[in-house]
Image (cartoon, rainbow, N blue to C red; front, side, top):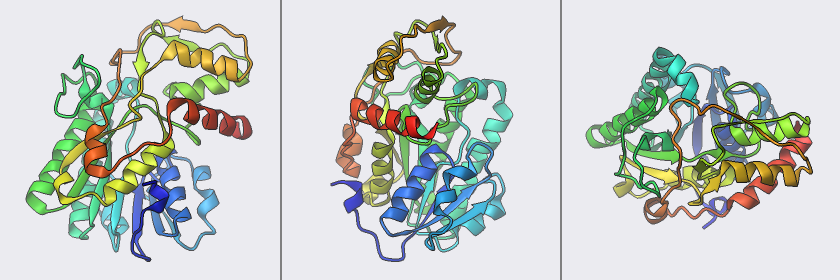
Length: 324
């Protein structure tokens, strides 16, 4: 079943934290198009107001500028909410190594605030963003839930901690929590700017500007690049997950494996650019290879990703051509 065919009660209210960010704004857009209500909570530290300006005239949309590190803000945001889609977090492995205290406060304490506020407001399901980084140095492919290694960064630690806290809230307080381990999400509205920008939008922007992109390492690292539409599906299906899924975390990916150097040349071909990349040092804390086994999400969530890498990349390129 496609996520657009999912059905919720007429006046269902979703809270999307980090709703002005890349994934959050796409979730807000999808829910509004389905005819349901959205409350967006974002402190605009990494999210952008322009990502959600298009929703301001929609009577089903409400924006709260606020920080998940403030518990009172979380309580107010959760009032009357049916489902929480908790996307608020700071990403980037290298940046987390530079800012461990902030990452702990934002990604762990902030998520804990949201869990407690959701419990006190009787939220039906708390869906939250985890990350493939929780697999750490576990070498086996594909990555399978329950087989995790040593964590390689403070960012990965924050996501593992979020999973453990969510498990406690399902076990002791009866809050249905569903963790989604995102694998290298890409698509429309992903920020191409800054030192910590994701690789696909960054390469696209640089190539469109006839600049030479830098690939960290030898380009032979592989990732399970996952188009945003698959992530929207996972979030909405997680809201309706059976009770046996409570407290669990699930891989959210397509289940493919793409090498960075191949992606680079696919982009140069699609954009008709003849620019060779520069090769830089490996990034600290990065894993070499990653791809996902999504059978657990298919079984318990009904997850059925429709967008393979090639289809998603084509859509992403078209969006950036029109919007950069």
